[in-house]
Length: 160
Image 1 (cartoon, helix red, strand yellow):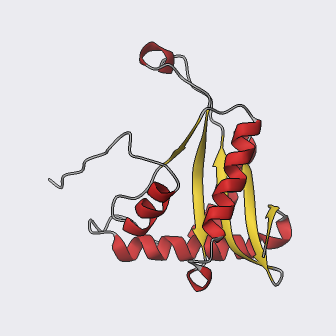
Image 2 (cartoon, one colour):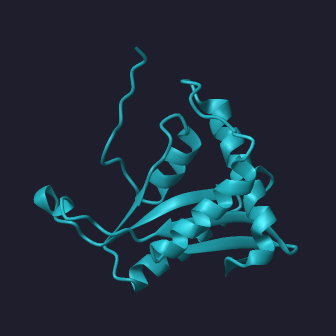
């Protein structure tokens, strides 16, 4: 297994990985608000990759037998003029996607992907890394906790 920067020849693998993640999210969504839209597979990867380009980010792939079996995407978003009113605004990277195919999990691939993206963020003088984790994704929460991440904000929801 090797970690490489995204190449277009792996676009279909990226689409498959994103669908696999969304199907998992659907299976654990206790609120039943997520969906797998018919256009998700074709559009989501392009939207994610465009965001990576727009915000000085990176997409790294875990490759095995010339197939992407995992990916991580991250961006370095800018603050807006209002953020400075109540926040110190240290430069930060944001992990936008992290997926390891269910057939290859628990082999350290996620660890290697996150290390690679964190190295990139450090090279860009980021002081922090943020990641949003779906509250019902206990596997993801535990993974990030083991990597030294911790909650900073919570979003509560109530059905009316």
